[in-house]
Image 1 (cartoon, rainbow, N blue to C red):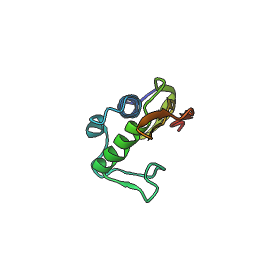
Image 2: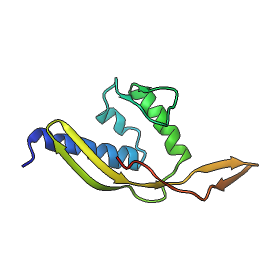
Image 3: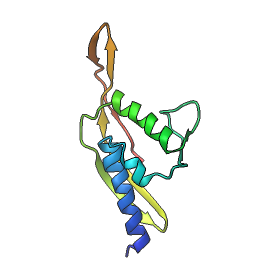
Image 4: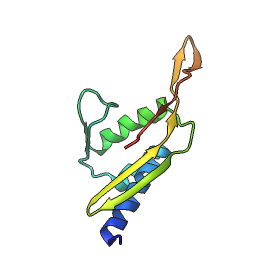
Length: 114
């Protein structure tokens, strides 16, 4: 049986994954991320992302460079106490501006299997 806290946390995680990561809705960060959030990701290889504003900047650049080619699908989501785990799948492509033409690099990658 899911507790009230687990249900709330599941709803927050689902919103973050579907709306922020899946649709690139940067405004969702204001709703679900603490202003002092820290994240370690390959999207900022020089160190952790420090704070909500930097988080939005880093992911905004990612969303611009890698538009989705498929809908994000949550494959599994569960909560235990104050923890939530989300496993999802999404495919994106990389656009490269080269010789004044927009080229599509014929690769996709599976972003975000957590």
